[in-house]
Length: 334
Image 1 (spheres, rainbow, N blue to C red):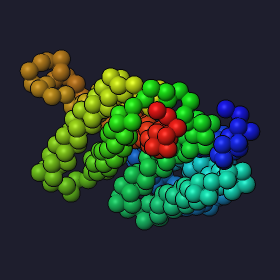
Image 2 (spheres, rainbow, N blue to C red):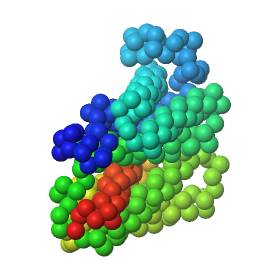
Image 3 (tube, one colour):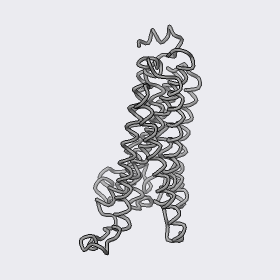
């Protein structure tokens, strides 16, 4: 649908710049989460003891040869800071573009809220370095995926599809649209809660009792089972009944990600706590855990990053489903 037609229907004008910034922010934040996961995996959070400077340098002026070819933990931590700064700059650009080009007052404030959230996340990261406090690290680790999900949702809010949501919706039922929106929204909340539980396990200390650890593990496993059943229900709903393809694709992708995450979760347990029932098999008994090994770190970080991706997929599917529901309610789709 052209911009002129959007204007004729009273819709705000689609902006390639605003949409491009929203997509760019999402693209930058995902590797930021990956690198942040490596920071936690390698305990590299204190590789640079000062903030916002890097060993007294302005972080942007810190010699590249020092951190690119220096210790691995320094490279990971400084890269994390630079990626975080880049995401903040893109968020600033998104706010400017929203206020200049977007006619929706609510979206302008949405962009401002997104900027404030990335600033808060940066401050949390700095406080974590200055205080070396594990609780702050847990909060920092939970805010990042939430920001990633909101950034992904912003890509939908600024897309051309958002301004012409009726295209391709013919034949989608009213009831199924509302039911899918409710189920997918529940999956978004459930997947984020699962991520919070995972953050507690990821930042566990020797002070935690065995009973508390078992309780967290069992809760994490139970939540994974609920999430798997939920995505299967959502997949059946969007496949069995006619609905908009843009929702169906994200729900099916979410289903595949949850299955992958369960596999990665089992692998994470193995690389962290050894293989189960090793006493029954000599080959398994010979397995040893290599602390901070490449494969082990890759598996653990992939498990964390995939959890963030699941929340983002659920958020995008939820936003699309509710947008469809609103269009149906307005009577623009039968």
